[in-house]
Image 1: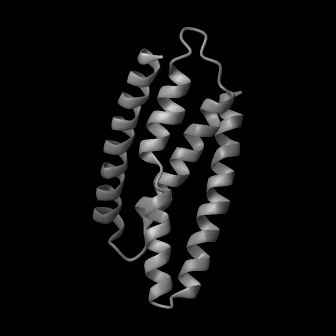
Image 2: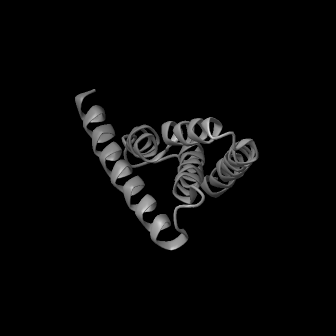
Image 3: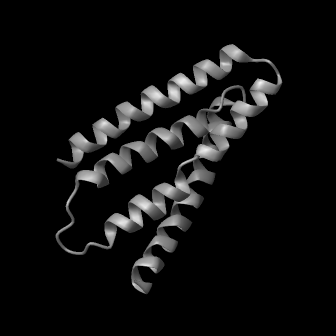
Length: 120
């Protein structure tokens, strides 16, 4: 149990660092108009989680908790997504809110399915 928790902790650390780097990259590349970093992190986390959900790791079972719980938990950005939506709702930007919700839901569902296909 302690070993599993350590691997989840390490995966979470790498996920959090990766999230920070994706945010910096997206701001430098696309600017700050649309939350590309949040969308990209959510899509990538969905892709990875879909892959890990169906992948069997013969060598050691520690990889699933480390990647699925640790890395994807640290990398995924649902709380950031919610804060961005809340701020846009406060500014009465309802079109943006609907677009942002739609893109995240549709693209993340597609990414989960793609990840599962790749894992098989």
